[in-house]
Image (cartoon, rainbow over the protein chains, first blue to last red):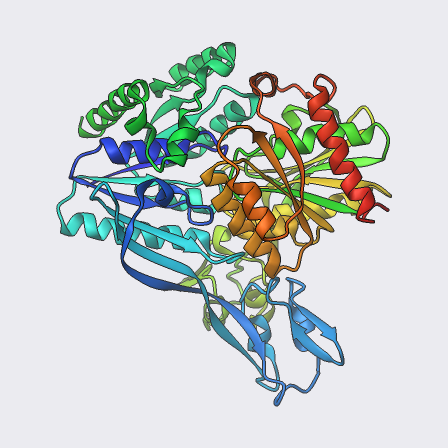
Length: 291
Length: 285
């Protein structure tokens, strides 16, 4: 089983629209995973029907039992996250600031503090309208541990792929270079970079390439909205060549991305031009991971 | 006063709005632009200022000292992040998992885990005409953005007085985004009138309601997509304070790293609407 992860550094370059198109163009041997867990959009194009769902219980929150609390303030003294304050004659935990480290619970002389596990979101297994099995998740509003949730989505999808002898796992990643991205890269066989020829797209691409190089994973790149700035697109192409990164496709700036989204379709389904370029890119990726 | 520019979905125009608005506002009011998208800081590509000051940012992690360690394993048992591991004859520390809670260090009976600073990135302060610009830049390979966001966020209050802070926030709705808006007086949610823009806007609204934050919406790329974002905001009583017309010329200028508020009247007039909203809502200090 081979894992293909689609990331971009910068958000809004067309990552999810392109992942959805690959989901459409790929064969029966593919399982899908959305690892952009805190702003996941892939389901909007794939219209999944839920097969099963499960709570994501992960982080902890300190809770004070006021029947036992003696107001000694030790919890306030040791907390590094400004999560304990003295309010209305008592010590209170601010749930937004608490990181669930448990230091306060550990040292409370009255044993008045306990840690309660939190529901940080939901994990889903679904069947998409393209008849592919789809693993996805939704991080609760403001919840922590997106990296762990990504790891869990991937683990479930991987297990399913192995059990069903599927050849490919297609993963939509998140923007940035932090923990959810690093988590989505772990174990990947091929990374598809989606960029745009803007100063920010190119800047973020270089940072994300440097990250992927640390993992020594093979990369290919799609330049979306290539005609917005052809000079910068050429610079990006030269850079890719220097870094030995395959150029998989150049796509024009086209409202068809938004039109497809509104029609709840992938761009490959509504535009023959996009479909042609993306099928070629998909074939190159498959050849590359098989080779 | 601190105003956070956030979005949920990436690529909706947070950096575009933050840089143009901050540069425009700084012409009349002392303003600092703070780039809290430390994983991919982009504001500096548009605000090409002179570097005034720069410092390395650190987080504190335990550093095992073998000499007095009795191998009691207390450090491992108190760490909720699996960042400290007791193996046969050593204590291993994984800095990328550590949240700097100090529990292992301070509860160690033999003081064998003193905290040591571990580099996570750089905070820089630039000046661009009248505008102050502060940027946090995470080292590549670092997993946790939150400690650097928190330090970058604290920088203006320590070094600059009586300024309006405009903060360019990271995308998403997870801890980096929440950390960035946590102490804002007002959050401006930048969205685009598309199904993805709307879906992620709703997620961010849910988070801000829980945080009890005051917020309003700016619609960018107005003209693409449909009117569902406006319908949603109307039904939720969320103020839509400006709509910036979709225009290929903006995308082309943006791609080159240029500010556009001085080039296009239709952009400046929308920024004026945001200024008016802030004046009228009594937020200006």
